[in-house]
Length: 446
Image: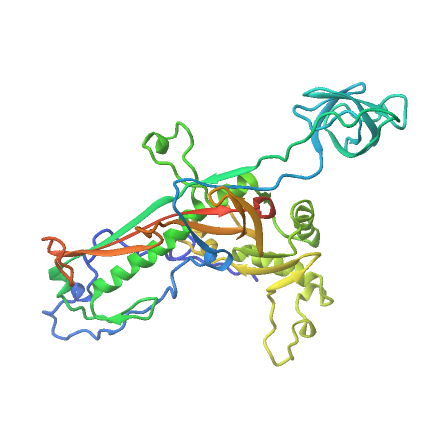
């Protein structure tokens, strides 16, 4: 049997949605015909059919917030310790790799992915180096001429010779980002503030009342709080020559952008155990962080559950009373919250990727693997090493101004008396940026 569901909207019921006209048509009374012989039976309380509609909290779960007083945020990250190149080519015993790090006297392993040979560097220039094989008169013909990988494993010098010529500087991997200003506002006239609605409305923070504008103001605030996070998830810098750059907007480097450019990308579906093992191989090559959290959409979560269940003795039934410590009278838990496969993984659904009005509508991202814990980096502003979460938010702040989350009221209604406008305006502002430290330890699942 297959289950076919026809949603009332694209991916779910998407209407009604907020409109720019704050109060038009929002009162139930506007649709009631009072000339009718009988009054309608009106439900007093608004029905909350979508539950908690906020999609933020991801950054609050995995990161921290810290102040900055600069337009530019910089930090430096470690480079690789050992010397290696990929994609090199060779002609006889000379290997070409632009900007290679090898010096005369270093011993290297040369591999084409199938065959390998050990040799010593005899001549080195900026973009080429000659080698002498330890195993043959020349590099074996079996070694391919393209697509070579080379790494150094030591050095050898004859008796009575000078030392290593040349030195190596630590690689500079300086990352930058810039904060962006996020704004929103809400306005209601003084007359509408004096209008009492017939329907009791409830907000996500638990406040209730019969003043409809309170609900609209709260939803504006709630939406703005979501945007403070989503701007740092989906944000991209304005490319040179782009329309945004021409209009003097700069954008910011969001999480997805950083991972697509500096992190790891996993594509495809999780069908068998070996698909999860591919993630392990990536982590082995990077920082090897022991604990990792997977924030995934519902479909990917189900895929991982099926793979894990298939490892169980129950086989195709994908259920086991013993594994979940359940009795036959209890409901069987078919989901997994974590597993160990060389590393510890914790899995949770990311509401943003499931919501049909945000990431669940068009996003090609299925999830993100985030390392748990902290990392030590050199903070260019502080001028010293600092311990930071892998993900954290920087917001603008000085002794005179705190722009983490500003909210203020203007107008002449609702207690405000700052202008002659017969209305209440509520303004929201934040200036912030996301710092992704050690993006090589993250995996973007697409």
